Length: 259
Ligand code: G
Ligand code: G
Ligand code: NA
Ligand code: MN
Image (cartoon, rainbow, N blue to C red; front, side, top):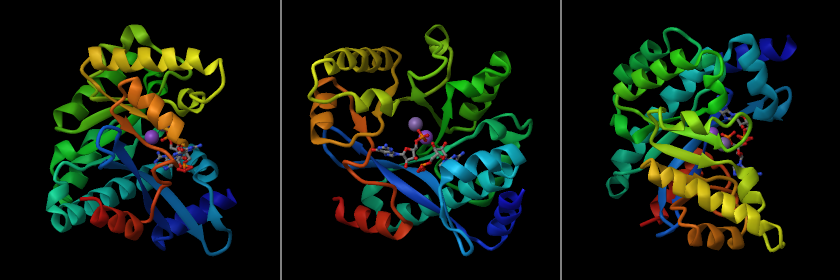
């Protein structure tokens, strides 16, 4: 309860910030986009982990106004970067959608309102969803994905390969991208058994490509993983090896130095 009250106040007092983690082409090592991730610097508590407060926001429904703020902020930032860096015209901004947001009957209208307010090239905005969002009502979820695609947005399936993996349904999702969960990437190391994980990752990459999806590997932390993913034909990567999530100022500096 306490945290919920503080978060309500935090939204009004603009204590939330968006951080941006680069998504990199593993072929050219150039930045292809960013994933927006929320951060909270509370005057009372100091830095509060999103792993702690996002679930509370989700539970209390505060994720709805916070999610709207996130999307608006991400669009505003994209417009700034598009203006400032014409050479980065194909930059893509990824924004996470939580379960509670996904179950809003007026989600599409909420997004349209924000896009009307902050006009942005729609194909440079990508929404990240997880398979678990589809578990409430599959047909309804599918219809919603279709309406989000119809807005002209891109869709990404996050944390792919974990939990309830619906391989048989994958081809029906109107998505553009698969993100390989970092638990697979983690296990690409020097150890013998990592060979098995390499085969799994290879298979996910091939599956993605056969379905004409882009594939992004998450949670890359070592040069070894970069080389392994390159040899497995994975074209995009994200993780601490390249960069942790950055403040908008730091991300702007990085873009300025990325030709
Ligand atoms: O950002 P990481 O740094 O620690 O975030 C931890 C978890 O918090 C993520 O796995 C994700 O579930 C959630 N999270 C972080 N940022 C966002 C956001 O902008 N929107 C939503 N819905 N969840 C987020
Ligand atoms: O997949 P999801 O959106 O839940 O993931 C975002 C989370 O992953 C955030 O918490 C982000 O800070 C975290 N993250 C990003 N890169 C790495 C990494 O290289 N290693 C680990 N362990 N976590 C990462
Ligand atoms: Na994500
Ligand atoms: Mn993920």
